[in-house]
Image (cartoon, rainbow, N blue to C red; front, side):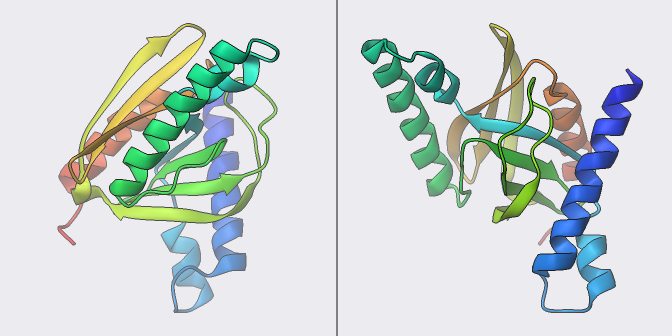
Length: 175
């Protein structure tokens, strides 16, 4: 289980590096790096993305997966979150952030940060639920009244992210 800690450290370092380069806040460098001090983060995709990609020549399964991914991407957009496949999902002490990443190296781990997609205040996140999904996990989020699902690989600590998000929601100041 020590590799989970290493994975989290690497993700936090990647997000801090991206914040240093992108400077998402219009203030000094240390403030941007502090902004990036994430509590938890995992690699996810819109629910249905894996079915769409893994189906290959099976056009029916690929179509079903594409339809599901589109449905959940639109629902996330209604809530103010941009969803990409794959992407990083990060919890800070005040926000839930989606990050554009490169292709991960497997099991929901890896992928270097390429940029910030979107962010919502933790007070806007109403509910999070994690369920097993074949060889991965399904994450259902309710943000600003919109329900949408994401999928994470088997190696991603989706329940750890959900627990951290719930703890941070309780401790976060209202925005």
